Figure 1 (tube, helix red, strand yellow):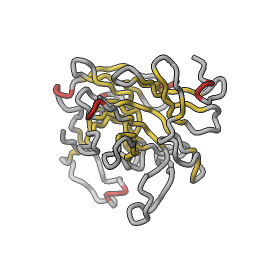
Figure 2 (figure 1 turned 90 degrees about the horizontal axis):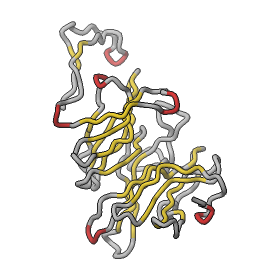
Figure 3 (figure 1 turned 60 degrees about the vertical axis):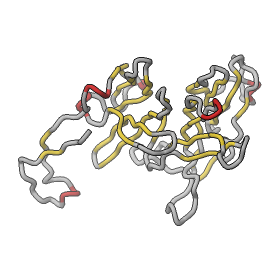
Figure 4 (figure 1 turned 90 degrees about the vertical axis):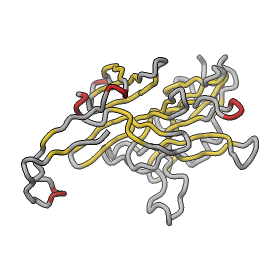
Length: 264
């Protein structure tokens, strides 16, 4: 499809298209050149009416030496009046920039890989205080990376988050209500599943989930397609560890009977 009608140069960088639940609208992330930030575009299903989504794009293209990308769009199931919200990832930083709330502003670098900007999730949705208007609402505030949102049939949000600690890295799955509540683990919390990364999660028609499981640094982002059911049990194993050399243990010995474990 020729996307020059969208205002994009020939040969644009286009990523992760999403189709609305009524099959009338397509959203995708794109940019004309590698020096441009990614932006969210929408078009009709027949290819007409393509344009950058103005409400989402209403921010500076760069800050703190980082491009402010908008990407990974996903439509929510229809809500009141059949209206679908559009959830997306962005590196713009927090919408609330008051110094009393956060001691930083604008895009930040993800600690695991300083070459990449941190991403949080946001929603473009009807404004309950202004009929016929929309608003942007921030859904996550973590100083790591949260992206690749998708929706369950009941309207709950599922996505990938970066987990990090001393000597530890993982991309795990999360679930959250669209109103921002009930943020909690979904799957891939522990290495017992055999992979350090879980991405592109989607709920299937039978209520099972599918995701791509991979290892950090896998060539070309390759991985394994897996299907899981949360009702079959929790995804961790109990294991013993020696914590005498951990810096956060101040060198104190720990009983050999000590074990670290996770709760479901």
